[in-house]
Length: 156
Image (tube, rainbow, N blue to C red; front, side, top):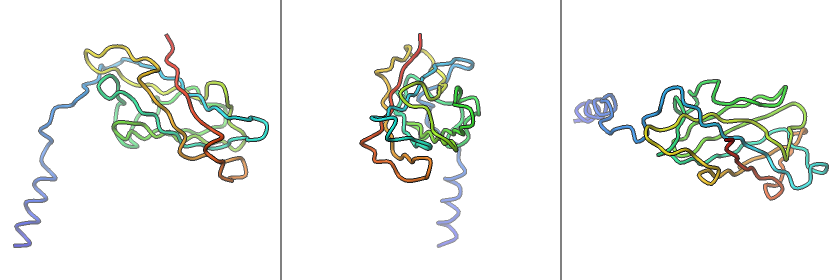
């Protein structure tokens, strides 16, 4: 009986998904979104690392790849010496950016490049929400989350 159950589970796991992609992406489209880290008091609260989650309209835009397997070109415009990664969680993108020194705040931090869904209207900043889920100073001390936030702008 165990063998039969295991076989059925393996077949279900290996079977291709029968559901249609809710957002077929337009190849070569670029819906750029500028992310800004906002710090209440820049002189008192330097930030060297931050994890943000960017909620996006999944019927308008998406990322090529999924999970941590998104192209390196998904993120651009990072500060010199900073390292940034994106993790596509489906309905939102987790962005981690860190630097040995201080990250710029209250100005554009990076640009995230989405692909537009087929037949979708152009996105606006109101389609996105951004929240900081973790932040640290250059000494790797946690920064209280009430001192930092992130915003989104869509260039036109």
